[in-house]
Length: 373
Ligand SMILES: NC(=O)C1=CN([C@@H]2O[C@H](COP(=O)(O)OP(=O)(O)OC[C@H]3O[C@@H](n4cnc5c(N)ncnc54)[C@H](OP(=O)(O)O)[C@@H]3O)[C@@H](O)[C@H]2O)C=CC1
Ligand SMILES: N[C@@H](CC=O)C(=O)O
Ligand code: NA
Image (cartoon, rainbow, N blue to C red):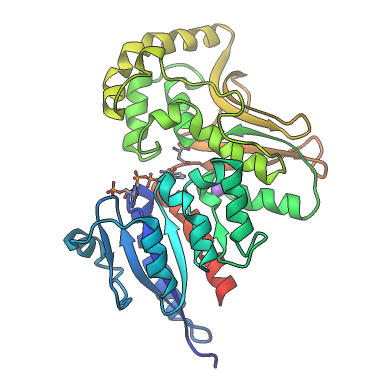
């Protein structure tokens, strides 16, 4: 029988997604360690939030049942990514870093982690949708890119746990020609328009639905990052790059913002949310204009690969269109390819929420563990 193997895990970010991930990690850890033929032991060796960090110089595993109390009791301040990388590179087994933040500094350090042999799994879009140079640096360092370092997987950076990135990669790797990708890419925007402007009329005020989307854990930490279209633009940047386009950044193509001009100078997300209701009438007008044409408005994006054309914004849809019929935070993503012809390959389901996003992260972790074992 082969010797039992160990994989060390470090988790940065324990918010809506991070907490769900840690619960899923506890289950996964129990299942892998109980395998009779091929046990694998997962050791959590670092956990951190924005203010605090828990780790041990001797790499003593953190208890997955008590991590939260133990982290709260920690007196260690958060460390810069370079120090975290130095700690992790000397761990007693291969390490997977799970970044559950939306932090740019952590994202910028992925090439460093990867070069040190540390694998990265993450729902954080920042690294893959920032400059094209950062994208190149990551995949030049990664073992599942052109490099010899750790592995990198980021399924939940688009469509939460839905298999969007793995599907696109397989289309490309098996030689299909991806022509167009289009759909609804934001759980927040989907929820907002499905509940503010449902087919058949009714719906709450726009500002009240934004607050609900935040409470449900669908929005980015600052909901302005969803409403300004940038979150969708980041997802399209990632998909366009995977489809072969050298998109320079999420601001290098047209993106429609739903932030009223007067609120662009708000100094915080809370101030923005407190004042958003002042603009509900504008959104009601948009709703009425569409209804008068027998349509609804939805926030969509598209990538035309041949034309190198990416765009994000509002569009009107007939009430019979599948995009108009979406429910809750559902995303719908259609891949038009040479093989699939006029009938696209379609992926649909919840595109935001802690559990479904964490599932994509845990799925990526399982892929890395298999590759490392
Ligand atoms: N929520 C969703 O439905 C989806 C989210 N995502 C992505 O998942 C990621 C996490 O989202 P979500 O859980 O909703 O966000 P939250 O705001 O709920 O959680 C973010 C966590 O990151 C921590 N954090 C922020 N900066 C740092 C830092 N420098 N060092 C250590 N910890 C830090 C925060 O610390 P503290 O607790 O101290 O505030 C918090 O624990 C984001 O990148 C998001 O885009 C992707 C798909 C869907
Ligand atoms: N805020 C995002 C979360 C997932 O990426 C969304 O609403 O889709
Ligand atoms: Na996904």
